[in-house]
Length: 257
Image (cartoon, rainbow, N blue to C red; front, side):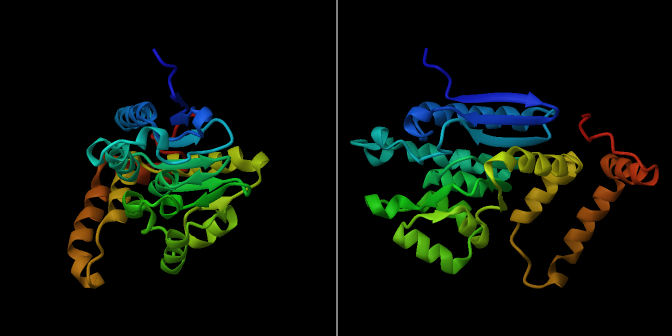
């Protein structure tokens, strides 16, 4: 049996999913894709998990699809066919997902970064939509990347395949922040703590809200949003949050330190 390429660990309400295939720069091989999808399913179903952190071993976060497996395969046999499920799991996860990058990401790896809710990287991390350089199209990842990126930057970087750094990734909306390597874990912990302070059901519904099509005018959406808001104010979770605020204590869903 092959060694596992994705590790799963839960501590204090945080599920850490670690890509561990440094020999091929954490490329999205069939084994890694399967294990990653299983880990995301497990985290989503675990009531003890409040936040998910997606990280890696080795110097590279993820190099994209495994090109060795792609070589010679027909369109119906390409591993990329399985990739939308992973992006969908990250994008729609009821638990917020934080990407922790201590190194570069390319192609499909960037698609995963974009599918996460929060993304933090070291300044040395680099990025490139390298697909056009090998004669393929960044089609699938466009569905998670384009909602994040400044449109002008997206045209430039998708079409040229040029490499860009973490500073620019923050400027164009791909990353939330870039911090020195010695501060990376503290920055991830800061985001995790802030996310875990939110009500689990409220966070899941807010994630769904962020992905909804916007109504043509605010007036077109007020009735639906009023119903949603009132429902949560009256919910068990909402009432606990209101009571905790009045009693100057943490709500019962905040993980114990």
